[in-house]
Length: 179
Image (cartoon, one colour):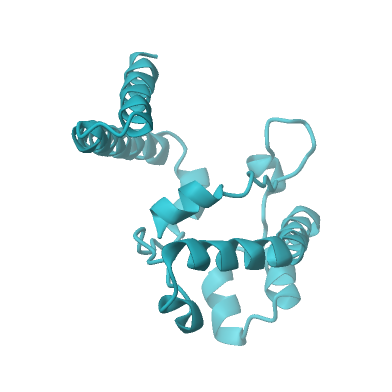
């Protein structure tokens, strides 16, 4: 709770400095960024501890987690070439409009993926549904065909193993910051 309060205090100070066009806004931003970095590192350490404990307390269930590949976490957001010569505001506007246009299709694809996992009785069904080649299927199954849904049921009594949640779209201001 203290972390949340400190974050809100730093955000408020930054907001007020930016709102009043004060030169201290840079200092407030750096303070918030430093605190956020510290908290991200702290959470990373906590997750590592929790996962290590999880691996030792329930190794049969953890084996599925251990099979998940790690990917680069700093995914670069690339602006399409046709927008790169335009202002940030125009780039953001164009990309947000495209996101709105693609949102329904994206949600449909994700919901289909969720449905595939929740209705499949084994891994081979999923591989077949998504047309994995023989090498991929062998890699995914590694002699274990069952999904063991009772092991993975979510705690909402739906007997689902996967759910999809879609957050609100980014605001133009937030998207401009990310650019």
